[in-house]
Image 1 (cartoon, rainbow, N blue to C red):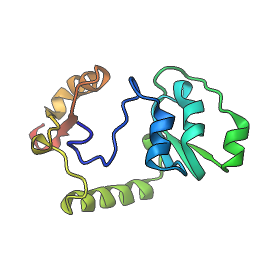
Image 2: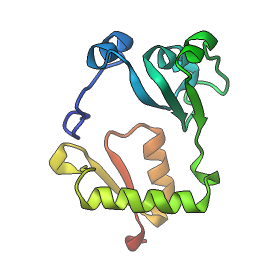
Image 3: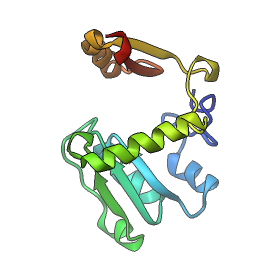
Image 4: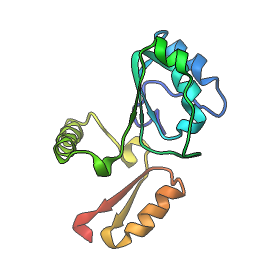
Length: 149
């Protein structure tokens, strides 16, 4: 699905050595890790970060606390950033909406059935069902169609 959605590289963390695969793709490492499971992945994140790289965490699947290895992060001058959309400044959210909308219009972000990515539509009245679908790791994108609800 990731390749169908346009990913340049795909690494299966369940069957491949992620750090080795990332270093094959980019010997310097990656600039940004978008992290949903820091408790499990902090050491791996530090291993694959490029100099001045950052880890942006927006979820805590698998634990509320984590430990990061100090020296590897210090050597690369890594930055760990917590992200919670609900508390982000309104102006930043506005910029994000504008940027994402422009990317969608330019087809820089392209999802949907034609890319092999299922779209699961819910009305606003079905928001609880949409949330449940996300929690149950439905394959594809979950959308709430405000115009329908």
